[in-house]
Image 1 (cartoon, rainbow, N blue to C red):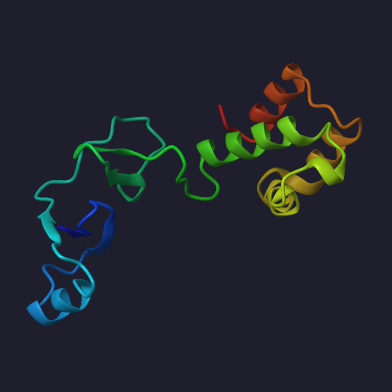
Image 2 (image 1 turned 135 degrees about the horizontal axis):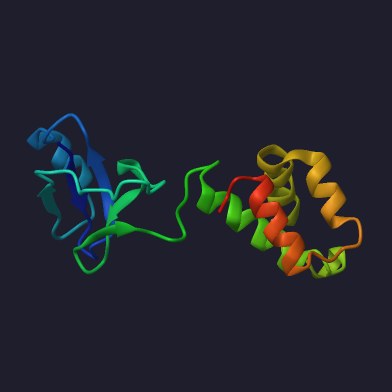
Length: 143
């Protein structure tokens, strides 16, 4: 079972899946910190059957509960594919100068995870309608 180590501001500092850290290792983590918290997660949270999330997707959230951080996704999951498609739909109509700096990276992700031919076809007119977006979801098995 994992041990979680939190900084004094309650942000996650480190997770040990090999058991509790030795005192010397814990002291290294504490450098520059007034306090640090150790939490042992005794049982893995139950993931509902049919859910695409896995144990690795779960975090201890700021309120102390265990949950999924919407901004953190594993590549290739349905959530990740939907994020790519939503991003492409949002910024496709803009000129290159108006697109975010990470547009090329997200476009490359689309090529890898959705297929280059599919992405090029859908971006041909620079607009992805909601119907086209639904088709992309279906083709990517992201529903």
